[in-house]
Length: 324
Picture (tube, rainbow, N blue to C red):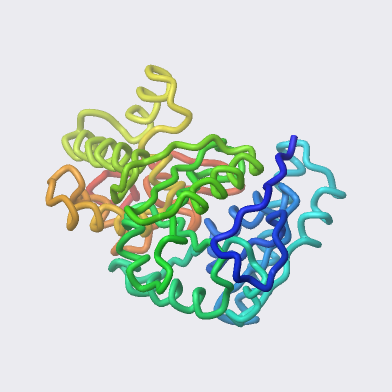
């Protein structure tokens, strides 16, 4: 049941009529951005999707269509639902198209192995230059403090972190991370927005990594240690945590699902922030990344993926599980 958002405003000096949140912008439509777009459009909001080129946008829309087809097959979505979702998505390469958005969510992802902080700050700046003062600017970054992004803004009180936990389309949870000067309007509006997406809210006191990422990274690193020591196989370690402790995914399945290229950036970011060895990327993860075995989205990581199935590797860990 949808909840109406009532009469919030940052300033009485605004040309836009007060009322409902209707339009959401999403800047950066990689895999995470696509899932955010689906969830937001499914909840009935109009979405402005911005990415780097029309060619890239065409590819993204095909991928979103395929993701919706999977949801039809697995989760009971109908073809009519798919058409309704796609009809609410407007695509653009121009930041000025965000001018009517009530909330804009930054979800950029660079293929570089270094931090995306400067890229994200540039995106924040471009968003602010093209939206009204009342527009809330959100980052989905999981290992970046929102205060490190908001300092590029003229109106820093409108910035907030909202981490959508993967898989975004099924996990009913978001982590909300505010900075010291985030104002009450921004917090209240994001709370209402999250509820309209049917997401429970975890309020996080300013910390890179929030709760979810800071917990899962040491777990994955320790699983890699067990694997390198020969204590257990990839599948046995995963099965132990799934069958023994009720986890939906084991650490290696989860790492492959996140993407090892993305995971190593999270690890480096937290290690640089805290200097704690538990966040430092395992040598095994770095080896997989160097060989571009990034996980499920490329067909191989800790596991092989073929025909929609996850397959255990039979080779030595020395050869990254390959038979050589």
